[in-house]
Length: 394
Image (cartoon, rainbow, N blue to C red; front, top):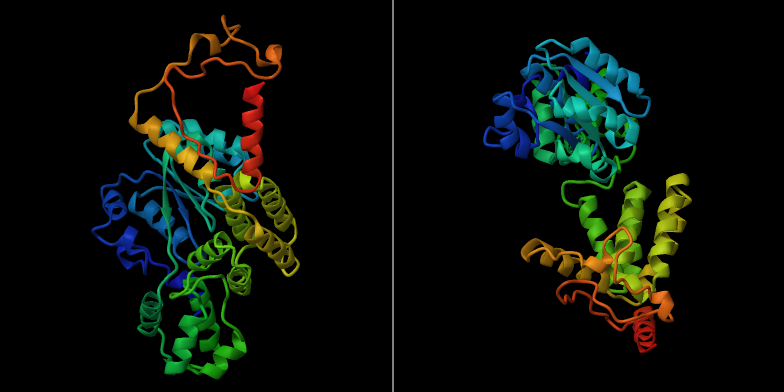
């Protein structure tokens, strides 16, 4: 049988392997689908975890036309053509956009009104969390759902399902390798299984390793997800342990983790854990993110290593992080402060222009006194404290 991944793709949500937080009968998403009330949704997670499959199941359950588009080659006219085709009818198509994080702002804007008017159900999929690549308009009209790597138990269930329809045997050590080497990716498992059966209906470890000599490495396994490794790397940098940070970086690289994913985490750390104790840290981390987006492995590992060593060596301060947290907490829990009249636009009356007073002049900037920022006095933050003190003494 050719193309096992296509043949064994489930047609009902009840038959989906894994993703119990979405597809089990008690899950909210399952209930919404059965009630035919699916929201515009964006799926993200590792490859081979069922994102496209669930989109197709939604279309079948809703008895709706299914359009599969790829954001990497998508033209705005394709959206418009679909909307025009179904305009004025009671048919609401399901439009599935793969690699959705690559949609341009213009492409997203074309979707806004049809989404608002429920002219179609928009489903997007990505191996990356698309939250920050989507406009606020798209985000407010949709929901985000994460897909998890399939567990060993999930993949074993899939192997049994194939055995029920295809006559083959598999040695126990071969099955362990088949499942373990697929790293939570059902498509990868079925692909290897398909060609192993073509070689011999008795599947051995030797035959599997001749087709897939090494484990698939995507930074994910049932016991050691890339999130845990990334978390350990970040905590090691925060703790200024250079060697531990390099070890976890090496594990991520060995797992073929996307260098841009690693770099994004480093950018966040540079601001959250170092901040103004060394403002150069954010610049280096941002340049690292930009550089690795243009340069792949193996060279990007050197760039990431340089950044990790620098960040681990920096003085640490979370003053910026705690300050914005305190600010947002105040805004969420206290009454809103009115903007003082002399600060309003345009041409406020009574505003004292600091440059007319040598750079600083005492005047109120809020209607009530607030305090959110506490300097750590570490590294460059100490210099900033001295600057503020000198400015106000002027």
